Image (cartoon, rainbow, N blue to C red; front, side):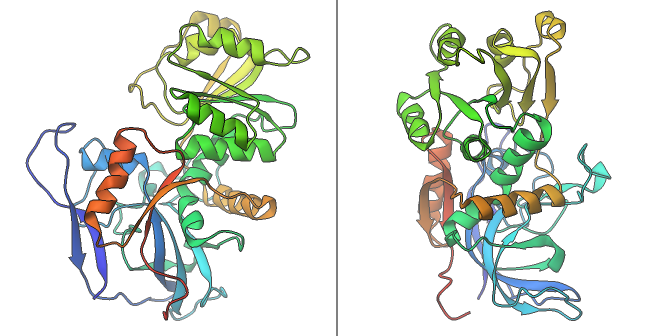
Length: 359
């Protein structure tokens, strides 16, 4: 029988509890009008899933399958479908309720992310999923199933933070991306390089910085070092000795650390705060006209643009490690432990089924 992977409810306070994973047997779904039945081949973890297991995310569900990212093959189409996706590999959109508005969801009350929460019943940690035909994109042919599954959330988040919100994704611009090694940061790095930006990184690990430089980063600094911003400043080119934008997922003291490096009117595009749910804001940043812009996932239009660009540029998401089998709970728990310890360099992915096998 088809399976879903959820969390199991146990008693405990938010931030202390750690909900166990639970495998469930379910009936195979059938597509309705304008819907597709997708056999999922791979699904990827995000830090959001780790927060859900700790009850540190709003509206968690013990019934909705986990995970928001997945790749699969369309094996059945419902009545009235107008798209030609049958027997093709597709990427699932990781969120719902945001069409095209660049400022934010058209109706914020209707916006939701897939996986492990109450607003919707969809999640990618399962064997089969039924979605509306408008909620998939053809997978770029150069991507493997694991690479495709790794792309949706980090690709969309990175695209919005770098391209839409920073407005500095242009050749020759100096962009700093913090916390290299995480999926979004790496995707920002890859997108920025493909767009002709000069990319710089921070990390708590010299090895991760070296790997980022192998991917094309111009330089990097260890944020645990005192005055790391001064070391970074010395790396910037003489003819453009400043940062145009910072793409940040950590928060904390990022404003005070980069305000002297940013050009007047420079942008800090913030897509997360892993250090703490607050960050500094200085009068000096106000006087320099620095702009702080919050950034989340993105619209359906941005998702389509991102996937198209990935296909055109033949970009491959970086994979840190995979676990084989939706029923290999211990191995999947191991992926979560990599995330807990920040060991990963790239995405953590569950391989659920082989695309080559009979559908």
